[in-house]
Structures are given as structure tokens and as C-alpha cells.
Length: 431
Ligand code: FES
Ligand SMILES: [Fe+2]
Image 1: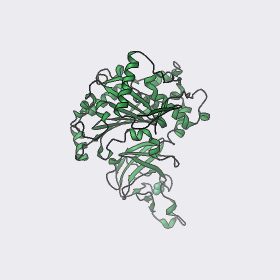
Image 2: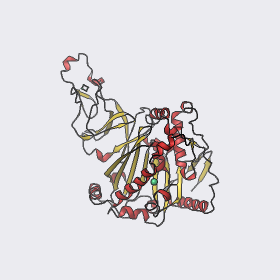
Image 3: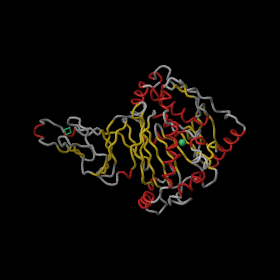
């Protein structure tokens, strides 16, 4: 494979997780660890101001610059089984309703009635033939068009055609639904870039959501994201869970464009990760047609700005991390089964939900250890006891998305002293 360097962008001409490439990166990581060498071609990272995690003004800037300009995970296709299937959520303080229409499309709207601004749909989810406001019964079809107004004769000159629900950009990556509040945003596929091809082997038509969990914790959302982006902590936090399975020092770490990253970790034995998941009775090895590297590694990705994805042969674990306030975060975890070719995806998901608890228990236990590690972290960070965070090579993914945060915010809009220096981090792009 040709790998050539162009300033700080590393151009790779094929799959970033091609097995020979990953194995070479593992060998290099192993050599560096054994000889206690910092990779010669990797820059030292500057320190990150703690105020980015604790200051209200930075939090408010994020709300506009990050959450209103990025593609955000909003759900999974199989949450919308039939026409009229809907789900409501609040993202970045915006009430959102997603609904499948009678043509099969999934549409996203501001969940706001165009009469007098009531929150349109109050239920969390369900199936409805149309979207009806509970206040005065203005009724919209599944494309968001206003179709019925009680006593319409009392509204002379009302143009119902001009009173559709305000729509939100909504695009799919396989089974995963994303929205973007920025009407001018580049398409989702462009935003995913290299990451899209990195996880493009996941057979999304065979992926089904079978369990979800949600937790709130009193720490800034980026501290939670940081935790799930790096694996420097694995030996110390996951001593008896993950650490016996994976050699977290031996990993291929790849910072990708748009703030995404890929982390491909060497297991201690070839089947270490698969064995945890396979004990759920999910698909056996070599049946999913996924990348060769899947069965012999722990594949994990950070999807900018707030999602962590773990890929195995039979299970996807997706974690989305949402700010509630500057010092409060909600973490939503989703377990998705991947069925074998020819197997009924619904039956696989049902079996996993009913009987397959090993994978869920394993990931839940690991997640709990992470959350415990972050206990009282916000108080500590806000105490005046630390001004800057120092990141090591194994935490480079954190630096990568911080640079992307600053790019979106704009250098001139970052409060004094809170910027992150661009040190020329190597970013992987494909030719
Ligand atoms: S506010 Fe929705 S119908 Fe009046
Ligand atoms: Fe962890």
C-alpha cells in the first residue's frame, strides 16, 4: 500500500483497516512500548485549558457552533417500523420529532406547532396517522404539511401551504439516522468521510436495535467523550473486564478528518472479544462478511462530535453523549444485533433481547467502571486545582476533535485562553 505524507495529512490509498496495515501499526506500537519510545513522527500535543470543560460561556458557544452545525445521531431505522412511527427527542435544546411517512422516508421536524408554538407531540414515541397538536388540534400529515385547522373560516387568508412544520435535515448511514440543524451542511456522507468507509463493511440491512440504556452523570459531556475515545485507562479502570481481553497498549490509532477517529486494538487472544459477544448466541465467526480485522481486534470509533461505536461481528454498541448543562451529561447506549446472511434480522434481535445478556452485561459493566472513574471529576476540574489538561500519544483522538471544535467555533470566537493549538496532528485521509 502506498502511504505518502502531505503536510499533516496522511493520504492512504485503500482501507485504513486493511489487515497488513493494522498489523504493521500493532508491531510499531509494540516496538515503541517495549523500547519506551514516543513515535518519532508524532508531534507533542499542547495542553488543553480546563475552562473548556467548566465555563458556561464556552458551553454556550458549543451550543451554537457544534450542536447546530454537526450531523447528530437521532435514532435507528428500525425504531420506525411503519408509516406513522414517530419518536420525539430534544437535541441541543431543540424539540425534535422524527416520523416515517407513507412513502417510507424518515422525516425530521422541529416539534413545534405552527399555530401558537405549542410543543406539537408530547409522547416519546408510537404510531400515529398524522401529527396533531393537542392544544387546538391543528393537524399535519407525515410530511409535515398542515392539513386540518378547526374552524378554518376564523382564519381569513390563512395559507395552509405556508404553515408546514419546520423541517430539519435528516439523512441515513445504513441503519443509523442523523439530523443536522444547519440547512447548508455538507451531506452526511461527506461529513463521515474516511470514517464512513471504515465502518462501511457493517451490513446495515442486518442490523437491529435490541436494547438501549441511558444514564446521567454530573460531569461535562466532553469528559465523558474523552473517556470513550481513549484506551489509556483500560488497564487501570477495566482491570478485570477489558484488560484481560485486549492489549490496550498495542493499538492502531488513527485520527481522521472532521474530528473522527478509529482505534483498532489487539486482543490478547484471537477470539477474545468475539467470545464475549458470541456467548450471547449471536452470529458465529466468519459469517457476517465484515472486514478481516473484525474477528481479531477490538474495533472502536469516535464519530464527531459525540458518538462512540464499537464494532464486533455480531454486535454494534453505540454510545451517544449529550450535554444537559455545562456540568451534567446524558449517555445513551444502544445494543444492535448483526444477523447472519440468510437469518431473519428480527428473529436475531428478538433472541438477543430475550436470551443474549452476556454482551449487554459485559458492555454495561465496562461502562459502569468508566462512569465510576469520572465520579466527582467535574468538582475536581472546577476547583481551581488544575488549569490545563495534558494528553499523551494514546489520547490523541481527544486532541483531534478539540481541533475540530475550534475549527467550527472559529478561532476569533473562542474566549481568550481557551483555544487549542494546532500542532500538526497527522490526519488520515483516503486518496
Ligand atoms: S398551538 Fe398547536 S394547535 Fe394551537
Ligand atoms: Fe473505558
